[in-house]
Length: 379
Image (cartoon, rainbow, N blue to C red; front, side, top):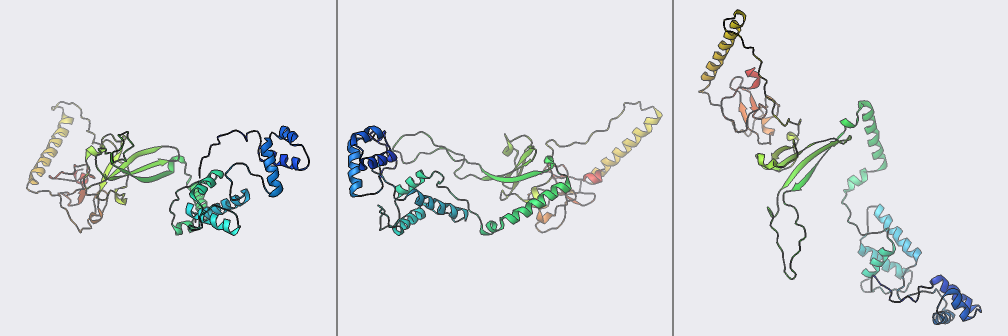
């Protein structure tokens, strides 16, 4: 069957079903044929043929070669059944609709061209049915867990929004304080787009950086006022490299985990883009012979000599970054326990107080392996 039939003649353009039906009834009631032809615009031979057919076989007059199997009311009943199944989250497929149409036609004892062996309507009828009812379409459903579906009801939604409004009113939160955080996965190798190539070839290739690529987790956040913070990129590796953040958005944060997934231990306060250095105390240019400043300068020289002597005494002590597997020692700066640290950052021990710290927490490079005194002891 032709799905998109285009009429080749214009013989039926001057009349429709209603005018043909009225013309046939008028001729049957005694109106002359020529008068009915001029009044209703129906060709004389067509009007005579339908008038003879109505006399022998009374029924509904139909135009054209293609006729709908079901009436409009019957098809609307099918549409309501399909929509009710969709609202119940038990949507029907095109095969199910075709089977229901066959069973419906058999039950109503309608004349149909459906194949009895397959016990379903044809695919052409299905496309015609969708074309006659534009409110229906073939869509891919989203998988929803049954427990989530049962829990998502009117009462639960009302309870959630009551608690939400109560929290907003009690805390006096504005749009600047309401943030939404979400993560997404981005592949390092994108799907190739279609290209123009020669016909007849079995396969056309396109060079990419990798066949599969790696999934990079991106953490984004935005508040209700429309302000967003720079994203955080989480790479599936053990050590972070500065080259991975080339051409990234300004002030973006780059970190890594062995699996590339977001972990609770790597989420924390946003670090400043530029490291904060210690300000040097302003000194006044004075003469050494001046009595009030001479004593201060001499005390400072004595302190510097003590520091130099202490650093010489510590030269024989070698500070090592030890990799421990089972240890509950916390970091002296961020208080994170060593055995729960999965970020792969290096640890270093203070030679004065004996407390372990992350290299990054003390402002050191990850590969720093020399004499170390923490900030608290140095002050």
